[in-house]
Figure 1 (tube, rainbow, N blue to C red):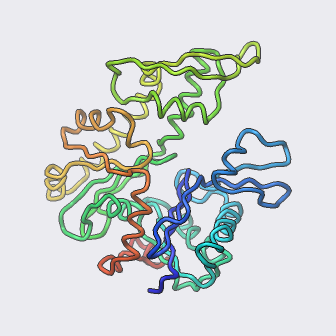
Figure 2 (cartoon, rainbow, N blue to C red; figure 1 turned 90 degrees about the vertical axis):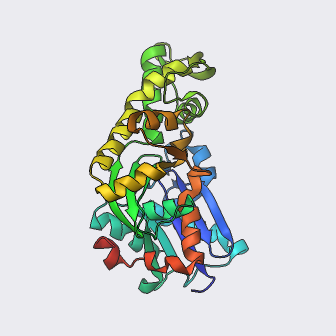
Length: 343
């Protein structure tokens, strides 16, 4: 394969692009700001506009629950990204692409990932767009060996979904996608703050609360954070002090739902692979894998060793990079037909 090869991780929250032999060259919010049909900003710049724009602006997240929900805006986002990268990293015309695609999605949703790149300004040939199952790329990025017969289990807690996968011999043995992720936790915090404190806060404030105060087990030491919002009754700006015990109570149910889904997959796992997982444990990745004591909650509920992967928010794109640059993973790059038929 030539050096003009790119790997793309189209996340609900982040868009990450990896170029062969150069590494990650784009890592920004998967957001596009459009005014009167014209792209005004993408990525982090567009995200700064979120919640602050006049009526003629539209700031959208084109990917929902791990799949492309707004094809036109996602196409505008990917083309604008290619344009932004052109001066430093070269034009992408005729390049080859590998894109990470979630497991457990429909054939139509799967096809949209391929169609996005075929329709983009890069105009790659049909045989120059391949895909990799996202859990497989995730495991490789976490430093796990997926090509052997030994089974491994990875839980990827993303922005809007949690993808649970058991893998062996480079393929997925069992998987489940749960529509719970970091954004659901943020939304729940917003709702609970409004109910408890009569305070309306934005998604960015909720995300800050989650990062600073969230915990998966009752906190032994209560931390607090002062936040600002709008009073429900008066409509005036006010402040409130939020504590970690309140945040734990707000998100506990969602975290336990993820744990229950993991236990369900373990129950459906073949005995031989289950014994491998008993030896190796479960690996947690994704942006919300670093919630305090989440590994302890999983360990209590599953009685298995739990490993929070280093650089957990970037394991998918790192894994795609390894697939690009290591020939032993060449069989993992799938055409549309193979991906649609389950690889």
